[in-house]
Amino acid sequence: MTGPDRLAEMTTVEAAGAAARGTVVLIPAGALEQHGPAMALGTDLVRAEAVVAEVATNLPGRVVVGPSIPVGVSPHHLRFPGTVTLTTGTFAALVREYVTSLHRHGWTRFLVVTGHGGNNAALTTVAQDLLVSHPDVQFAWSPLTALAGDAVAALRPSAVHGHSGEAETAQMLYLAPHLVHTDRLEPGTTTPDQLDDVSRVARHHAQPTLTLPYDRLSPNGVLGDPRRATADDGAAIVKAVVGRITAFLEDWPAS
Figure (cartoon, rainbow, N blue to C red):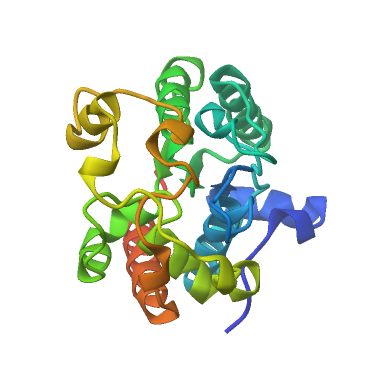
């Protein structure tokens, strides 16, 4: 099986041909933010790029891997060293300019795959704006872990789990084990009684949404117990995510 078709590795002639074939441009988006004491700041991009590469390999000639977006919307992690954030406006502008540049050359379908939930609101805004500014563009976006709820549930994660917890650590143990310091894996906030009153409300209610800084939710930036994660768990999550994104693209008509 050949590797994915990457825009950065094409000549301008090959790019023109890919656009003319009606390929979908896949754009991996991540973040540069804390992932607890044991995982790399670039965890979200690593996962997004790996999933996009697998999806593109599944669909040769039908998709093109576009340029990554390595920094995302992460103000809620800024108390932790190394975190870099874009404002929502800057992130949205970056996505729009990727899309509008490639649209000039004939591409009309785009899928952003984001490994960072903090990017979601801005991506929704971009999708709405493009309906007006570029009505012939079809713009989609997808999270990662949220597509694999069944595989995550099989992990039996902590009562409080999420960022840098069981599911995210499992994915990294499978995709990039060299970026996980297993000797530093430690639990963060795992039960509601470890949260203050406001944080408990924010985590308990899916809606309305209450956004809080992560240093308030967890002293070490971790939600869950990453020590319980395994590479096999990560493989199951990634397989589910890749399968569901691939199925969406197979169903997405070119016209």
